[in-house]
Image (cartoon, rainbow, N blue to C red; front, side):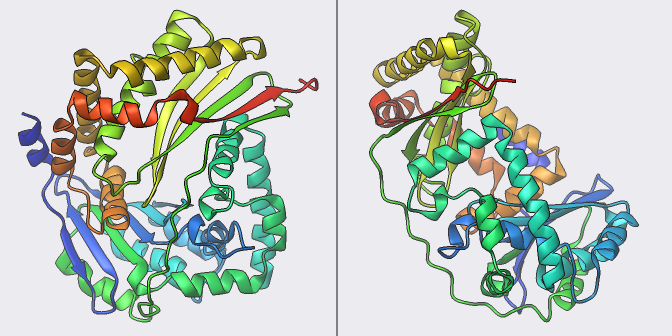
Length: 422
């Protein structure tokens, strides 16, 4: 039933490469009247030159300030006159500029979106304005302990590698970025060979092809791919710091394989059992059974050549030791005993249903197209993903648990409340 259901809501997208090298992936969904459009650029934080932390995110922000053809206010008006919503985000390995729009406005929205991505002018006055805005964005993240501790944890795991850098940079990083850094970064990375245009919704590749070719005719030509160096494994470390807050925040992390490794599916099953859901080991042990925490979970972040499995918990300072003992016990039990048949079935059901339900969202479908090309060099096929999850056995998960759930292998970052509580 799962396979037939996946077939009924998904057909392989049209996947073409334009003469200029830009890739276009079009997922036609005939029963809707809107579309999700994403321009994906294969560049992120890990591609930043030494001494220019935060420049990838800075480029993304400042691209909406001014282009060859539009001011910031005209960019906003051109999107909103169509009733469209536009935004963008930067990750460690890619940048995505996206729009949700009615299908009748796709041509106009594409014109504006591609103008933003391909032809920003990066005027000095715009860079100074955005410098101030991003500084406040950084401070807002630093005011959120749960957000901030993950940035600290990545730096702890990858201290001399760009994967350890916060996506937004630090206040000092943003202050020292120069006008030429922003221009040079865009010129180096925003070229035809690094760009994929993904569309999901009521659309037709034949009618779009000519339009997109025209809009991208002046795009920078393909350049050699930027080499990415994998971070070197690091022994577990343990960090404590003080912060003005009401809670203590605990972050445990262990390096894993990346998003191109065959073990990624078994790792995702392990993550669900460990801490992704109300029935997970961590939630049952630390919240339901002992009442130590309101928020506890695990998550898996996979990059091209490595990954991070993380556990987070927010607890009262008096309960730090109890929570740490609980986390260690959960990890040891799953490393030594694997998972139960019921946990295995439940995890597969969660992963299957999550993938199938995501097909009802045009934004999620567009993301599968674009992120699939970025990570695997081809659009994700949800039917194949579901089959891969279903092929994961309990023995596969036990092998992952033995590799990654030994407590001594995990680095820890503990943020204790300072005496300056509000």
